[in-house]
Image (cartoon, rainbow, N blue to C red; front, side):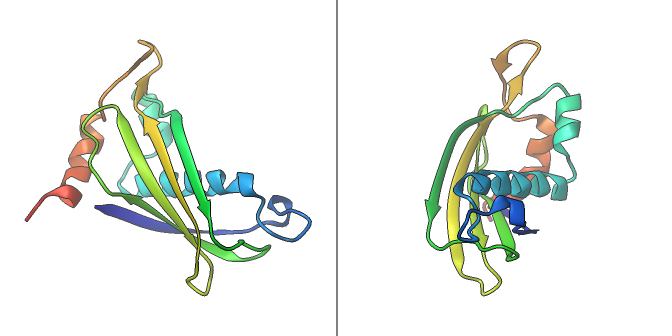
Length: 138
């Protein structure tokens, strides 16, 4: 299993009239978590795109437990629970407030895609090599 954390502060423009983080922005926070998780592995989305790989979202699920509020510092935990063995990769997201209360849980599934060939492809070997040690059974 691989996991990483990053933090995002809820900005005023992301809130509704009650001062709650608008539900549509949770997916954006998942994306911040994914991008930082990949960066912590030594890659960036930009580098993957330069390699000719894009990662469109094919599924998104969210569960809301408590609201994130204006000016809260949110911890975004991003988890890969399984190693990808094909074109799909699933990122599990958990959002916590400063009191470490679970606010939201999400699951985002993406595919590795070659835009020139217009087809799904397997995870790039460079990324697989970096991730494999997190999934090795001892």
